[in-house]
Amino acid sequence: MAIMRVVLASVLLAAAGARPQADEMALLQAMVSPERRGPEERLKRAMETARVKGVPRGISNVVQPMINFANSQYVSYMTMGKQFISGIVDTGSFELVVFGASCVSCGVAAHYNPALSGTFEEGTLTTSQNYGSGETYCYEGFEQVSIGPYPPKRQMFWEVVQAQMPILQQAAFEAIIGVGPAEQPLVQVWREVEYYVKDLTTYYEQAMMAPQQAIDAAEDMIKIAIKLGSELPMLHTWSIPQFSICMGARNGADGIIVWNDTTPFDKPALFTKVPVIGSLQSWSANLTVPALTYPGGGGNATSLGCDGGCEALIDSGTSLLAAPYEVVNKIYDAMDLLEDPCDLDKLPDITFRLGGGEFSLPPSAYMATVEGTPKGRVKALLEKHRPR
Image 1: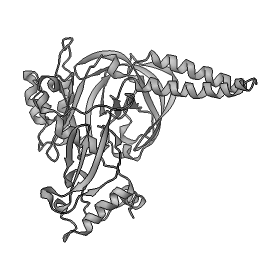
Image 2: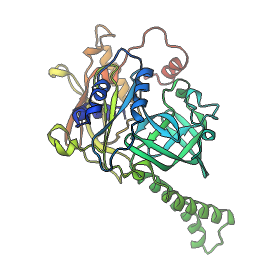
Image 3: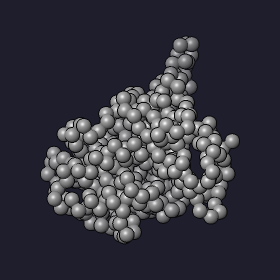
Image 4: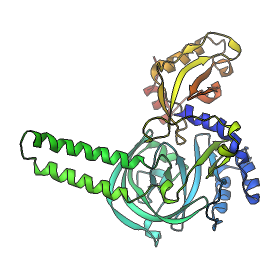
């Protein structure tokens, strides 16, 4: 996932010249280069920019900043009612998930308070959300939501009331803004319907009466599917045809999201086109021939598997590279060959193909140094996932 994320950062950096309006040019320049000011001050500046409304319908290439916190979280902003909410723009999910102020297990992420909003509407559904960093339990709600250039509209969202996500204790975000394929929630819920209907069918095929509990469960799931079909994800709410995400190439640099970005069509030579695979349930691409390759041809290339291709998720909400133990051990083997184990620049690049394009990641994109003795959650994480 992080592989895909860094690829986006390098490929879409060319979109930084996406013809922003004159009053946004200085902001864009600041977002793609590091500043001495801290992320909190930069986020405040970004929030002030968010107050500018009245964007004409059909406008293109509107730049919105994403603030870099410790090279691990890129946070942007939106409004819910009259409350400013910071969130991670996540291409790996598809729903708007907001951490409620009443959530005692949500750490510093707990911010949105429906009691302070005159436009909040309580929903009827509950759900759980699973992410790589943990799980949330949510209630359905509706609110007037605005993001970037798009004016406030009634939007369904999930308010987190309970969470098991350790990252929330130090989170810079207060919401997860899912911008994955808008069809995904309907695909998932109708698959659930199919499961319950098949359960009923097994009884009827044997000329047996189905238990009332099974009948009720199937009916409830069908009602939920029909209800969710009328509650559009954010990309549908504002009819967003395309967008781009760019993380600054320099250490500590901020990023940008470009709403309705037309640059890939206006200047196709600056981009590598990668087909989306699967049934449009996620932004996924076919990854082939991943390998550890030394620049200049020094050393032998080491295959990382993925024979026949792997499905790679383009996930802007993930900041770390997760890989099977076998792959991690091959990187450790390369480290064993270093005279200085801390000289990470001597490590090989990770090279791979996406669609018809060739890409590579330098060691700085998949390896980091930890100073001092790991403690607390970092120590537990390293011990839990120790290779070999």
